[in-house]
Amino acid sequence: MTARHEVKGYLKEYYERRFSLEIIVPNSEEQRDIDTIIFDELVKFDIRNQSRKRYVEIVERLVLDEGAEAVILGCTEISLLLRQTDFPNIPLFDSAQLHCRAAVDFALQ
Image (cartoon, rainbow, N blue to C red; front, side, top):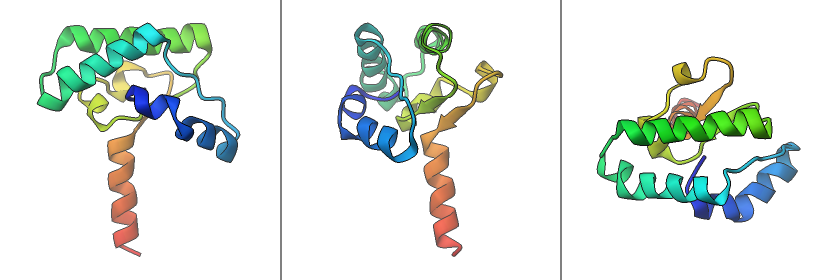
């Protein structure tokens, strides 16, 4: 899950080729909702329970209908709404946390 410009561009194709992955993306209605929540709410630290519920619905559909085996929280603000405890049976990869870990690892080399 990420903003539309991240999903549609070269990044999806690049990661699919580089890591032999099939990247499943939300449908256009879901992507519109994701973008609206990110840009109209989360970037302003406006955390709404209804938005959290919508994100959970989207992840559940991707898992149940599309066969997603993991979810990448590709926009750093999404972790304001979703936690690993919301989805105990599939891994969530929080890009903000992963970037921080990589920066610390790099600094400690």
